[in-house]
Length: 582
Image 1 (cartoon, rainbow, N blue to C red):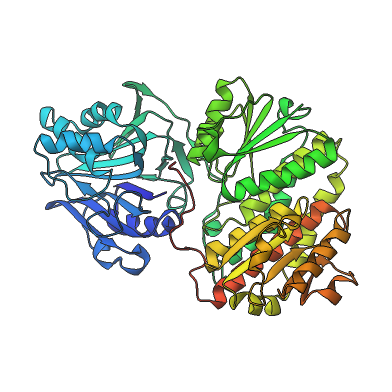
Image 2: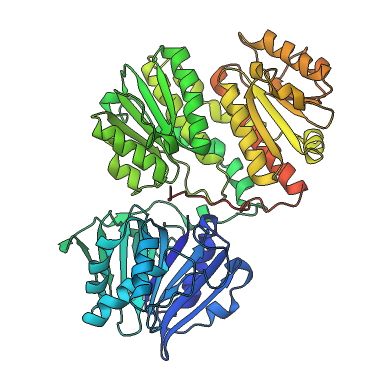
């Protein structure tokens, strides 16, 4: 949930770390800090707020070894004291941390009793004081970190420096950490985005890894044993993580969806799918947030097309209320680091289920955990709100449905990106004007368009801050009708099919309660424009394509509404891109 960057090399560390942290602000942006080893010892600078708005003092820090952090608060409010890095009592050791130390309260009580002074309310500060104690026994930073990590319960990616040593120690457990190998310099970071400008060569650490990074080498240990991790070439380009002339990353990523869908469809074939996915007797999907919505769309499509039963579970509930499962379990996570999804897959493996991961990130934790992994071809997604990763997830899942059904949909899926391209040109001015004046919005649909409604409502609430709820259309009359009024718009997804007639009736019922209706339906529909206040036509003649195009409409509607309201679209309040804590 936080972003960390470390550097050791031939250049001044602080400017590189600051620029790297700016690229990681989608992981957290309520405070930031940098520490370097300079000529006068350990130098540090940290502040509440965004590094993109207040970086001048941090850039001035001297030294060619440093660590930095951009925060998404979990323990302690956003303020200068709770910002990382955290220092030990001597002011000579600094730590930045991504994750949660679950047993920090007990460790803090023990450390306080032994005379340590705490300056923050964070869980992270216990780490630096534990290191301080071990470093006092033996002036060896690697030894100190190796000694204290068994005492930590929870998740962590740690970067540690001391002004007594010319190296950086890094450690990982259940939080992502990548080491970038450049020309006479080495980087450590939460993911590749701050590294891409400097190198394409990377090593992904695994749980339990502790590495010492010096001027001349990177040595990785696991349980005290020297290990090697493969050096991989990352095929993302620097341009992938730039706005490219768009006002926001979100809009850029919406416009990248046709290519992301097409690339993923081309990459996921019957040959690349693992054998155990071809003929499952049952499927369980575990996911969170938008990924849960893709799983629900998958459930409708697979059960309708192939008659294979699909069970869908919130990964966040799975750990505490695990259902009886067997067969294939699919974990969907854009980042590959979603803590709840990783835990659910571990439980599935413990029950001897075959596990498949769907993710966007090479080297992510889920790709090492699952029996097999299908990588989306979305490229880096910077905006917190998922758009192109959502469409790429659907491409993977639709290809699985297509494969199990005997590849009846191959031609349609191969050309579906053209319909997505067409919908990008739609004019939503009238619909946006209705939404910007609303405090509450309902989204309704039936069948696979019910999860489309859920996703549309999620996008609206997370970036515009308008309260929005998605419902199966028939459920609105079981309570929510009480909230309908002329000030409560309803966005209705109504496409041809078995539910078309009943959706028309539902829309008329909503209109009778005074609610303005924005209807999304097939172009050429003659009835919907007559009964809806605003009609949005979409291309597509099959449910697969209609799902895709209606999703893009709702993404654009949320985006333009948020922009009209002056919201920070790419960095919505209280949210972060990668949820690596439970």
